[in-house]
Image (tube, rainbow, N blue to C red; front, side, top):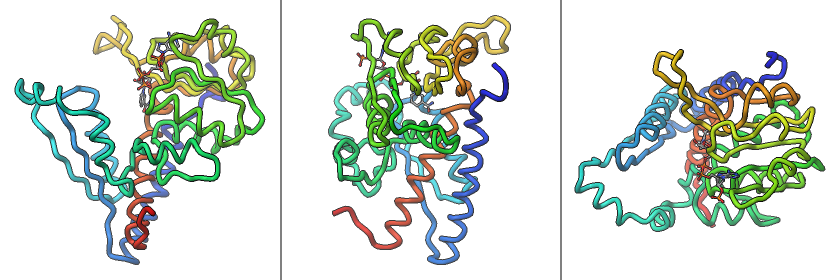
Length: 276
Ligand code: NDP
């Protein structure tokens, strides 16, 4: 895929992070307050541990405090985990601090006309930020979102719709996903299936945002695998006008958006603004 078609998520995320660092410095100087991010990690999933490590590093780089609480994942803890309800946990988070944007009130506001959520989920927000920073027109365009999870696909579709795209959502029960996708000017792939979106799925000139992070066996790689997306990168890149690589596309944007949401939360707290 030629460099001119590549969406440099890492570079754009770096720019956003330096913008945030400057704002944090200004906030500290003006108010004496330092934004902070608290992460509660339950269990010992490798991917979650990696994500939390990069969150802490990113916080330090922009001048945030970060606090971590790791709950052990020994057998009895895992036993306990079975009793933890994702629903109850999300309901317990104060919506003023819901920097992941997963609270049902924030998702509800995202879905309603005339309402604005306090926070938008980081990964889909990062996808839209890429489109906007690259001046990709969204209004009036056809968009296809592949996947409908609460954390990526569903909010991505809502965000595109709020920007006046005509959105089709494709999921595991959708017949003829390839034909639907091939009509889209903008494709956001978040199905978690290695390289599922083939070249023929892409309308010539479409913009492709690949959210997927999958390990693919590769005997030539040092670790024996490499990371690939939900899109067949070479084949789709041959037809797309712009495409995100994996890694280096959406991934870095997710963390940048988490920092942005955290800064926004701190700013509201500093101004004494509380959710109504
Ligand atoms: P989920 O597994 O929660 O959701 C996957 C969605 O894709 C579901 O809606 C599912 O449909 C749909 N789907 C699964 N198989 C197919 C298929 N064969 N055809 C069409 N649709 C299908 O995944 P997430 O949304 O959490 O994550 C998606 C991908 O994005 C993963 O690869 C994940 O690793 C990656 N990710 C990357 C992030 C980043 O920062 N870059 C952050 C978060 C996730 P149904 O609803 O019918 O089951």
